[in-house]
Image (cartoon, rainbow, N blue to C red; front, top):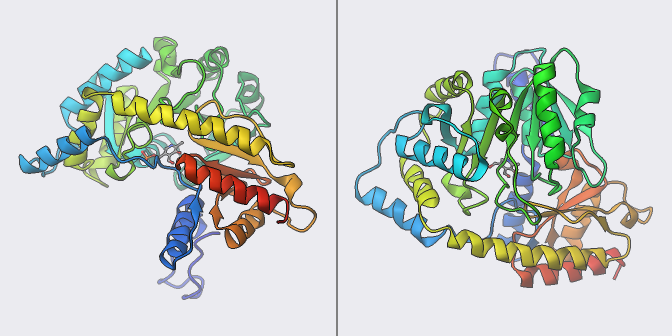
Length: 402
Ligand code: PLP
């Protein structure tokens, strides 16, 4: 649903919203979350599998670092790009884990990955430019690209939703300015094969487009090792913005810390935009993020083991439901499920299917429409095994009309 102008003012009135705001489609996942919270407040026993955030608490040592920062009075504005220690620690991480060398002045820390992406598109795109986005996709990219004045050009993918260089090549035109990559992906959990990533890097060089590579789910990978596009040599690195954050890996969604690493000319633009919008990411949260990188990684391993067990359970349990089809996710914490065979001629869309599931069985999942993939639903396994067991039972009853 678009914002519209609320119907309050006549078109052309000086009191109407901008056309930019009117065209904006608010986040459907956040809207679903608000609806679930309202239902839960009214006493309904809703199992929420719509969540895009780990259900774990932020590890204790990270919390303690934030408390220490407050007690030490580290509560003022910081450098716009983020504190130097954090940017140094991110640079070390990117070299150690991703084999990409960045200097601290090639890194910008922002208020969550979402804000970093918003500024990246603002920094890169002009009206008339085109941005390639593989679908299914997290629609924040689509709205942010539109807000920058550019036009999204979609690359529709079929299961198993793994982007190949040939898919990109088919869509290349003169106006393509940016390719958006998200591997592992939200909502499909698909991972781009290393060999394809390498070819995409070569294509970017040959055709001269820029790549924004959102790698926020890199730590949640159930098969193989994560591979960063920018690690394929200096030429590819020069045309890539590597984007990441602390929300998913460290269960830090509320702290709002994300970052971008890339050539200095684009980082400078992102920092300039930040200087006129948010000033800096919260000082205390930056200290917490620093501790996340420098402190023990054991809590992260524990969370990963738990996600792995839940994934195994959910993939098996959902696959056993007659009429449900899914490709096991290779990364992230979502199963992306084809429910079209469960419409039984009565329902027309996955949005209707999800609404009915919520109404009748108190289970919240996100309709594929929220990811430009009607007919599918996204089932998050950022919930306990016990909740997943009950939810699957309810979904199965719903599917079989009992
Ligand atoms: N990128 C992807 C693919 C996501 O799924 C999300 C959140 O759902 C984000 C970025 C935003 O993360 P952050 O909390 O750092 O803004």
